[in-house]
Length: 179
Image (tube, rainbow, N blue to C red; front, side, top):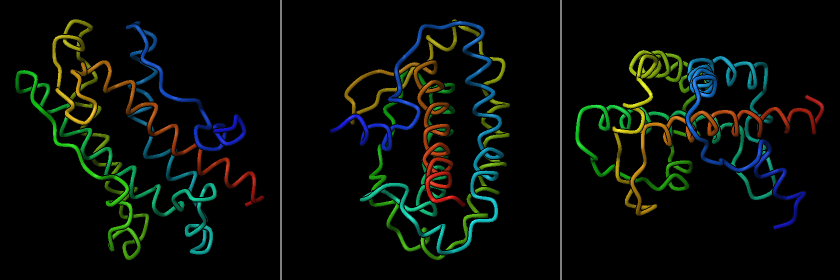
């Protein structure tokens, strides 16, 4: 993959695990807290044609991205809750590409997913805002697709990145298209 292609596909770079720091914890928690608002602003005033525009050739449309974030973050919330209440549970994976092509993605307005994300992220943030450094590493899940154990710290970083990653897809597309 070319560097230019990589910049379109990964506009904020690929996720890189980071060592724990209090500042990074606050940043990632803030990313989780404000992702719904950031996404809502990114898609604000887009018409149907714009929502049906892929962020890159062969990529998902803005509509698919918006619904995908909701799908992904619902799974993330469940993964966090499982990790907080069970000892190293095996999480359920899902076929995100298939989910992005389900009929609801094309028939349900994007504001349904942004509304869902506001409620979901409020619950998610409340569930994790006071987690200690020790608990971020003691509580884990087993990801069968990656065939490895992931700590809550790993998950927090991945999902904070994930939201910023897809919002950047949308904002870059808007800049590129002059919307």
